[in-house]
Length: 205
Image 1 (cartoon, one colour):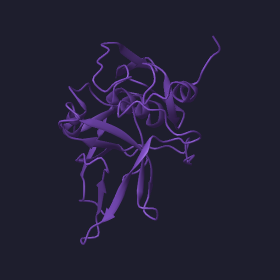
Image 2: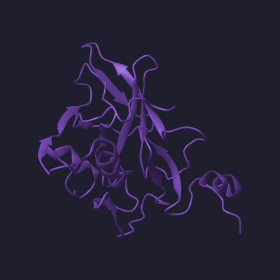
Image 3: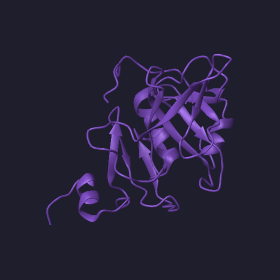
Image 4: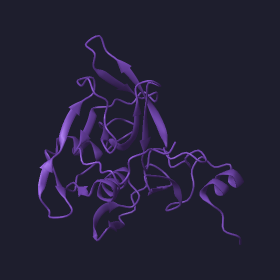
C-alpha cells in the first residue's frame, strides 16, 4: 500500500480525525501527532532530547516538547493541563536551573503573549483535564493569536499552514488584551518563560 500523509488519509476517508500517532502538523519544526480521539489515554510515555516530554499524544506532551525543543526549558509533570497554571517555575535543560514561569491572567496584560507562551484552559465538560496550546504568533493588527497543539480535535492542520487554529484578541477598556475562543471554552491566561532564542526569529504562516 502506498504511503499516505495525514492530509491524504483525511481526504481519502473523509474523517474528522486521523489514526493515533499520525503527524497532523508542525510549527517551529516541532511535529504534532494525532491522539485519534480526545478521550484516548495511551499510557505511553514519550521522551524528547533524552528527557521526559509526557504521555503520547496529549496536549501537555506537545506543550512540554515544544518548550524543550524551541526554548531549551521544561516544566514538571502535572495531572492535567489546567495544573500547569499553578506552576511557579520551569527548569532550563542546559543545567537544570529553576527559572520563573510567569502567570498572566487573561485580560490583565497590555502585551500579547509572546511566541512559546502556553495558553491554559480550565477543566470543563469538554476538557475534563483542561487544555494547553502553544502560542506561535500573536498579531494585534489581525486580532488573532495563532496556536499549535495536540489533542484539541486531532484533525490535520490545513495544508501549508504551521498552526492548528486561532483565537480572537479583544482590547478591553483598560487597554489590556483578552483572548476569546470561538468554541466558547474559557481561557485562563498564559504561562511564559520568556526564553525564545534568535534560532527561530520568524514565523512561517
